[in-house]
Image 1 (cartoon, protein in one colour):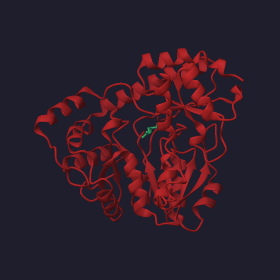
Image 2 (tube, protein in one colour; image 1 turned 60 degrees about the vertical axis):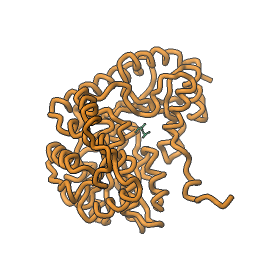
Image 3 (cartoon, protein in one colour; image 1 turned 30 degrees about the vertical axis):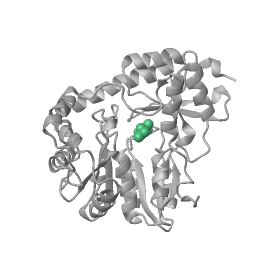
Amino acid sequence: MPGLSQRTEVFTDSVIRRMTRVSNRYGAVNLSQGFPDFDPPKELTDALMAVAPRGPHQYALTWGAQNFREALAKKQEHFSGMRVNPDEEIVVTCGSTEAMMAAMMSVCDPGDKVVVFSPFYENYGADAILSGAKPIYVPLVPPDFGFDADVLEAAIRQPGVKALILCNPSNPCGKVFTREELATIAELAIRYDIFAITDEVYEHIVYKPYEHIYMATLPGMRERTIICSSLSKTYSITGWRLGYVMAVPEVIDRVKKVHDFLTVGAAAPLMEAAVTALQSGDAYYEWLQQKYTHMKDLFVGGLKERGIVCTEPQGAYYVLVDISEFGYADDEEFCIDLAREVGVGAVPGSSFFKEDVNHLIRFHFAKQDETLKEALQRLEGIGKLKR
Ligand code: GLN
């Protein structure tokens, strides 16, 4: 057989999705791959039913249906004050996963570098490699996952750095970046003339008193921020694969080309139905915030009551649990034992950290009360994993 690409040899398959398969194998409550087990809003499923007989069923415009982009622009203006031109500044993608990949391929050439905060969502490492770029990691330091501005500057000023990836609110550590932190990053991005590629899929899942601030709204950042986000988390439709990139026209022209040849377009009937979701009023987003606050309090509170040491998320729907006391050298082995013997699925923390971190695992809590209570009850047996 001829040789296969070296690019695809140097990273593994997704550990998050691997752990979903492990959970399924052992019949565990799957708190590994983050997706809800509750339905999307009824207006949305009704809209989906209405689309079936009338369509559209053929390709939409490659960068997304007109009404969908217009609804996205309106929503973005409502929440951030930004004016986004739906024709020149938006590309609709197959999930934020494609959005990130298309953004990286649009700005990076082989040999370029991208700065990534660690812990990070595992796709970024693979995205960087697939786009030919080398990731440089800057630690977010527990317990509040702050960063050292000098360390960040030392990374950004390296020759060949084109972009910084910012996941805000952050998966997996639940950090919500403050205005001061964003200003520090922005100042460096401007000084060293790099892009900020933001992953803002958890923009509407933030716990009081924390507040999500869009990097693109900071002075001087509009033209150098490439926003990637999606409808998956906000409207509980991870399987619809509807994401988008927003940036200035010069950037979007490139993203349009990459997207055109990667996937042609997102699913036309799903875009048509999802316009309904994008037109939701403020009450929907307040309801969502309350719903997630309830799930966080139930699950994270339940972990603490059981003496399980964990982080306090400020946003997103993940919690990191410290497993030091169990005496495992390998956190993936711990997660497999946890699924098999305790019946709860988690993701090993090592898949999110560049540093040698083996004492953390990640649970997500986008689940119905019954599911979370079942998981908590099973976790009462976690002590049997102690070595
Ligand atoms: N974002 C989710 C997670 O971190 C799901 C990722 C995925 O599988 N696309 O678990």
